[in-house]
Image (cartoon, rainbow, N blue to C red):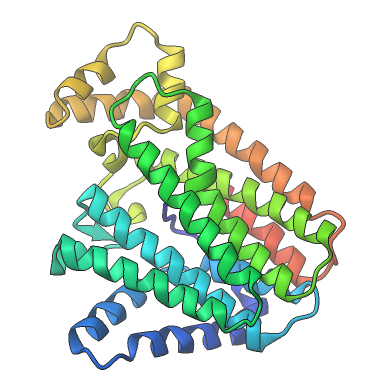
Length: 323
């Protein structure tokens, strides 16, 4: 779910706030247990772009910005995102993320699962500091959506009959839901109107869909340096993404992916399947679909207050499409 984004253009309007978010993340890491503290410090210094808390801060600044509640909400969003990555790495048995060793690789799966659970609880505790019941409620609903998507995805490993509709539903829950939570938290705590919140949610849902589609494209055409993990990791795990679905629609008689599903540990078959999908028109079609989602995201911002914060939100859609 991670992409290498040049987000300096969107960070600038909220740099002071992001420093406060980092302080809260450091506080979360400052626990009496040296082992837990080491794991928390490791995971928070892993080089994440802080894109989701930035969205929370930007959306809050569009309205009545209250740092004492919006900054904890932004930190909670980042911690929840981190928890999902820790759990993802256990599910996928990933040895690296963002170019460094994963928690499960260093400390084992059992500890990684417990750390992910700890992070979810820490996120909810920070959300409760906003003194607005809607914030922890929002995070709880997001956790449910992400878990629902992960369960459905697990039951569909190596399922070449997976449809576009199933894929869109899964990434809506798996990725877009957290983008929506990020923007909604800032808007609610910034006292935005119902219509303004709906517009921002529309923006975030479409942005999240585009982000995940572009991430899935990179799994075929990116480099290990860009991804921070091996190319083709999704296909190796049997995760059927949009490039594969479109490739199968375009090449119904091709049996390369079926062969891989039957012998998914065969490196030669994996490389052949990756090459076929990567050089097909499915990649271009995926990019066009992501572009369409970004267009809808931009359109949703149209009547919101203009200025640096809205421009930064718009810039995120352009950055996503540039990678």
